[in-house]
Length: 105
Image 1 (cartoon, rainbow, N blue to C red):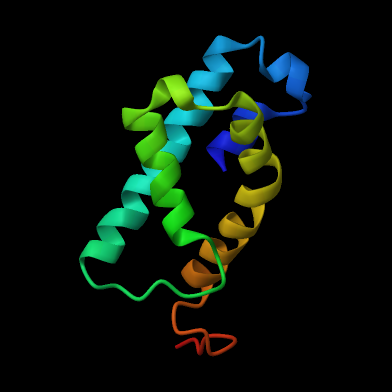
Image 2 (cartoon, rainbow, N blue to C red):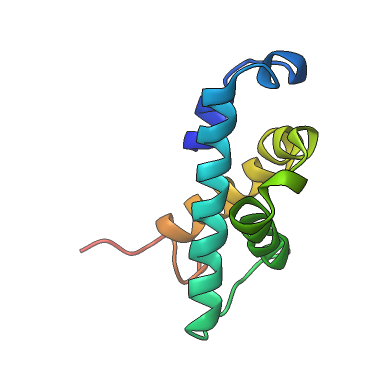
């Protein structure tokens, strides 16, 4: 959510001129990829048809191949690819068992 917030309503050209926004977005995506990798390494089952391995790959590119990082791809990931991930994680937080509404006591 933070990466989306950092990007705000910037278009691609404006984004490419904002070093602080680029760095903030990249750091958010790095943390997401790191978290996914740690979950995977613990044997956690990653549900949904989301690009979990691509998230780890993005993390690796940001951390180890920053010179290869495409700002267009970074922008597209936050605009198009990240919102479904955010929604999926929100749903997991609200209903970790995926069984509909929770019973309250």
